[in-house]
Image 1 (cartoon, rainbow, N blue to C red):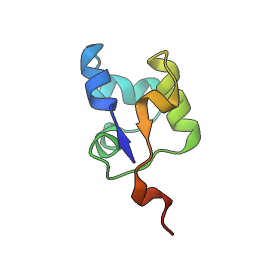
Image 2 (cartoon, helix red, strand yellow):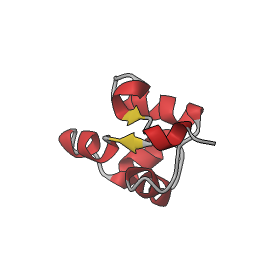
Image 3 (tube, helix red, strand yellow):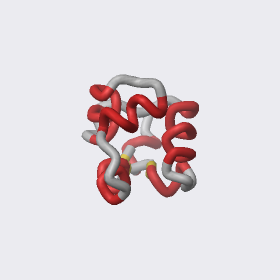
Image 4 (cartoon, helix red, strand yellow):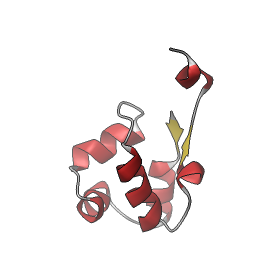
Amino acid sequence: MKNILKAERKRRNITQEQLADLVGVSRQSINAIERGKYVPSTVLAMKISEIFNTSVNSLFELESTDYQS
């Protein structure tokens, strides 16, 4: 899954730590999401999208490999 979380966070001048505090996860979790090493739960993705006042689909995008089993 691709995401634009880092770009959106920087555009709004929010640190990883601040975003983590707002959604109730560790800074390391935000870092892992941004690097594509961790796929957030639906609830976490929705919390993040609410912080940025945007849709989940505008922050996260499925890749063709996500459709393979």
